Length: 592
Image (cartoon, rainbow, N blue to C red; front, side, top):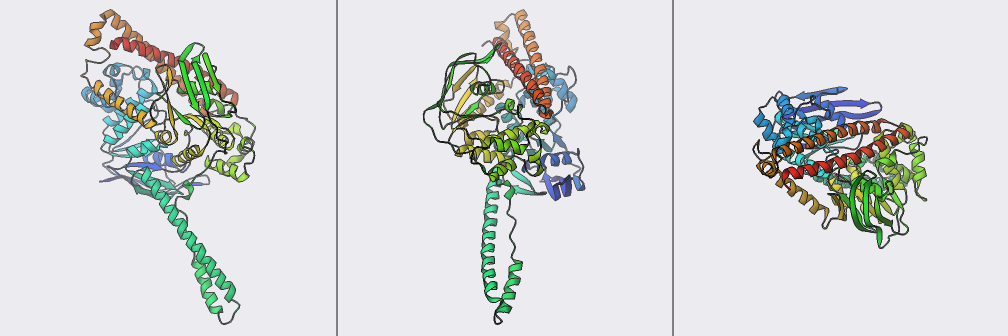
């Protein structure tokens, strides 16, 4: 083990907030480290400092001469018209065979290597950037929220890459399952200090609970001793015979100090208002068809969701999970069939389209007081606000000046204070740190109402879901097994696909001999041309969606945000239709 990057006696302040206060840490070339801390603790700032993109106020970053630092780039590093293989060879200066070998590890089909990389979807471009990262042969990777917006399959590929990577890693992620599978050490940032713990995130959290319990016991013993001393002093200080003993005890009392409870800031706990448990079906659908006026997403949906269940909605990106959620919470009209909520269902919704229509003139504090269920105390409201990073002067901020991420957190905080017996949640863990996601999972597990939700966070899904509904291939059906079984099935499919893709260059599954025998040359070329045209359109939509999402996160004008959301909705429908067309052409080329 060789230390190749160090932070020594580091200080960093933003305004009144002290992110680093004499903090130090050391990263080795064989350690995979998960960086843990509350939102706003400075995790992303530390990454930028170690990458050399931001300076310390005081202190030093020490880089070994052996350091070969790699990081997953968030920007677009591709040239106009550049193919996947061309980019990999230009970026890494490695030969074609080596680039093809590394591309295979990320299931990039041979035929895709000859496609312009900017015509690929965002998920495929991420895989290309990961392949480029490995080709540089780094011995330390720094990854800040690498799983954001990745579907389950791509997350698993990234996991396998990191697990087999021989160098060191520093990974910031709110996904506890991802950290557990990739990191063998945990680096905590808390109150300006950094502490390294051996073991993964689960071991760290167990250790944190043990330290906190120990500190509470020490403080309880100290308080008991204080009480005994104070009683003795009060009884004996006026008595001439015992006054000297009282003075001695007073000196002992002065020396008794309470210890600062370890990890106290990570102890978050909140609850949804209590609801009356109900029996029977909360939601029934009869031959339901969901989608948009010009595009059908799924049809023949026959579901029955029972009161008190917590249903996780699963499926790859673009299959229609959000469309289904929007339909059942009445923000999107079904195209056909029937949908009926049970008697007395009071539905609370967390979704992007909800926080675009918040009351602009209200403050954070006003909004939470208005949303809170009858009987909520001021302290309960303050506790929930603080858990979602609205404390001090922030509760006085007008909603109109909040960013998209702040608005999303505010909607979730408001939902915790309302009284609903059904919750529909679309990616509720977004914008939250590990501890807050864990507290949200605890709150949902104690909640006696019905929860219908989707999340890319596997640990959160594992904790919360009691039933699973899968959205796949234009169908929405109850999955017959648990969420863990679903993850196992996807992992197996991924492993089988990885083996199937390992074919020599020139014998691509898209244009192999099997296809050539079933299709005439002219017909095959025509289909390949159509396939590439569809891929170019999808890539163009992906770029447009990224730009609109960035606008939504930066705007504080409700009307503008709503218009941007409507644009996204229309684009999502067109992308899903294009993806279906792509699959049809691909299957014909595959001979299926």
